[in-house]
Length: 70
Ligand SMILES: [Zn+2]
Image: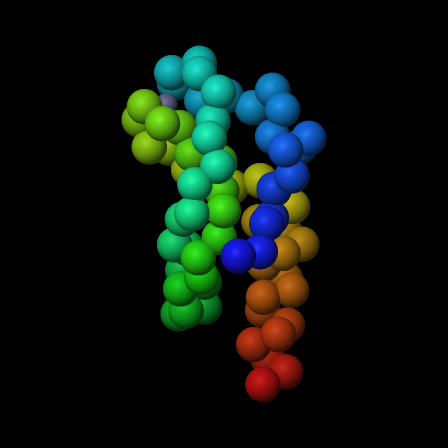
């Protein structure tokens, strides 16, 4: 599985509601009608999924590009 988030990038992230560290979990995200399993930081208590800017911007653009190429 592709890792979108490095441990270094994860350092210091915590849930804004629970104020506890986030954990990396496989999450199914949907984009342009397709579902992609990615490892994302999730709050183990309330289940909030944190989507990093690198994924929301850069990686999503890559996903969109790879779809268009096909
Ligand atoms: Zn939480």
